[in-house]
Image 1: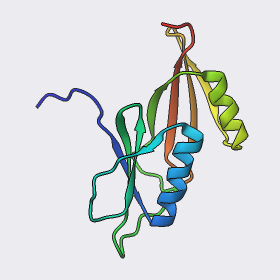
Image 2 (image 1 turned 135 degrees about the vertical axis):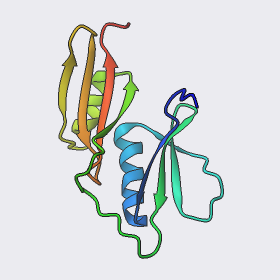
Image 3 (image 1 turned 135 degrees about the horizontal axis):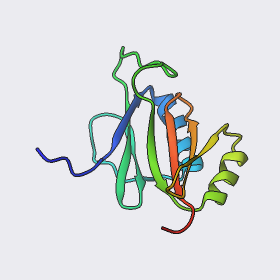
Image 4 (image 1 turned 120 degrees about the vertical axis):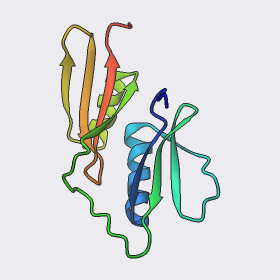
Length: 129
């Protein structure tokens, strides 16, 4: 086996939570809702460019998927452009965030959580490298 990269990650929740997450990742994070194969279950695929990076899948009847649970998952990170526009968007939607600079790399990171409590990191190269 030779892993070549991250294909996608999946969040699983109730239909109502999925709709909230879809709206958040589209309106706030900037992913795009796109084609999803005709599975027998409800859900969404959200894209960064041509890659479906986030799958949102409905939990089965009776399956409990509580939001805001602390476990080993900390965050997912996206490579981004337009730092100023991103900050404006987060502030427009009243999303609390923190910013950190990575030493020696000209990289700035924005950290926040989605409505289900999952961590998100957005990475920006500030000097064009």
